Image (cartoon, rainbow, N blue to C red; front, top):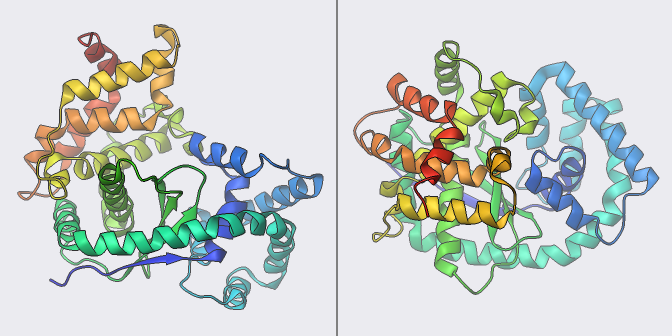
Length: 368
């Protein structure tokens, strides 16, 4: 089978859309922090605030017309490997209709000046990161493909999509941290948020990026309707887990929070598994003691009383991710390269997250 082909891209229109969309719908704590950075020199004007309200109504209109999938198709229009703003406008007009498209353009025009001020500063950083990323990826491509293929087999995939588009999005932190799936069809597209790459800890930064890419590509390439249907049937027999609305506030309901946390933790258990990590670093070993020690050290630094630790933990997906992937290490090892995901595996994930964060707090008692 031919290796997958990944196109790493920078799109001004994608960055502009992310900027306006995130101002209106920050999906988690991290994205709220982006807004603080973007607005630190100048608060939103009354005109901008009104424009965001109008944009929110456009999004709500799209949701009423076609639900979440329709909104995804709308978002994907801005993530295109084209330089022409006119082409995107024409596609929008066909997709939305002229009236709604014109309303959207009026909203966007309000934010262009603010965006271009940021873009002038951040675009050179993205260009530099793109060059580094292409060079680094070329070096690890065989290893990356082996990891990607192993994950595909775990999801029961026999054919892998190609090409795949990866868009770099401006951000205000160091390195590569956040990412998101944009679309699955007709071309898998994801975005990776990218800031200045520091000279320190280079190998750690790039290892994190490869795992982040694998995570988002799993969403885009393997989290298809067949898998979603399989997961939905499994969850019909399980109780919803309302504690994870804190972790994923955009889900709003216990049912959707449970579905989201299952999807994320299944991916984390596989992409953070030692067998996958060792494809990039043969000497890697997962140390549960270090993971627990790091979590407890972080909790102590928050200076919050122990009775508040459960809510603090639930608001920090990184803690959840590291803990669950460690606890499921042996289970995942028994599947990788041997069999595909099944109900037994789903049940092992569900049992762990059902008892979270109580199981983590119990394990932390053993850490001095």
